Length: 560
Image (cartoon, rainbow, N blue to C red):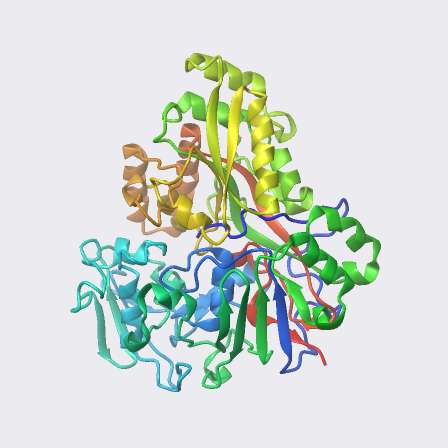
């Protein structure tokens, strides 16, 4: 899924211990044994929310919030470290029952699951929610339904086709069956995505559903002022007896949006008044590291989480002269990855990336096809390649970045490093609430994009095909921001998809990642970590691997 918060800044500090899930407001193990039910949890966000509509929610930060509002057939476990990458039942009684060689998947809904108005959640609501994701009006979601469901390539969604998609069957109110066009061994993981959340047809308001999705989780929307504040209040019809993941401890969750990141840090360091009941949504900024590290009581409230995310610079291969592999390789050599990491906060922001797959993913291979001293770039090699490509006098490019302080800092790092190779870069800042919608529009995307990707579940099958299969490029909601297409890569993706041995497939994806890197459609620069401040009254705080190391909002509570 899209790397959420790609424009924000992470913490930096020499000697800071970075243990996944460490810390916690009660100074314990971060699991909040002393948590009480009640109170108002405040979330201070320097980001906006891209989408809340489950059909369009495909950005990590928004998915973290969405998990409070709606449930899916399966979901990630609520746990720190690698355990958080496990897929567990959510609305369904199990993680799915495959048949017909994994071409058919059957799920049974738990008894007693309800919407916010008290009506039972039925299999038809899941079916309708998935069908909405095919609508042209809602283009930003993941492509798995279109890729895998039989008849999905021609289906136009429920607004144009009232008969529905025949490959989603609902033989009774608690059973849903998905008929696939190929074997998919990990379909039980795919149904953890928001597009598999239930949507009652009579509550669907089309594009306006984005501001008021109907709740199946512990909270419903009390008030939403886009770009300013989202207030979530209890869904009194949510039953913890049916939900082993969400704790639903606070009475209310108030998420303040588009705050100045420096102000967020200052408020969490001071932790006065309601800020004692608050958490930061994004990692602490580098300017705040000194005050955090100098105060043991504040440092104790710094929670660090791992992720499986890779940050990279996307290069639009359909734009001239970027269609020349030598120009793209020149950019790969010229890029100062260390400067980009510094812009994001320094060493604690993560490890310099040299290939697409992070080391924690199965199949990842140690590789560095465009090396430079300490990851700081090699302008001489870049200039030589540009000269070979006929651009000895340099060239000018435009870079899309989020319109945030972190986005600007990263843009300037790219600008400065490429300038050393004779490449002039103009920064085009885009509102964080519309960033991925804009760069996902192939006509609006410029030459370069500050970018990144987190697999939808731990494995390269939800990374390389979605980002580098040229057949999946769409005019809107496009995930392949390099607009990269290679017949050889596409054929290899198909061959790996047919493999029945997961270990062999993982190894094959590792080799494919190496092949793609030689074409340089993107330049990886960071494998993420995150260090987030929490208030002293907050319990249950840990970084979640699926949310780029951010806090898992579903487990947070407050001490009285």
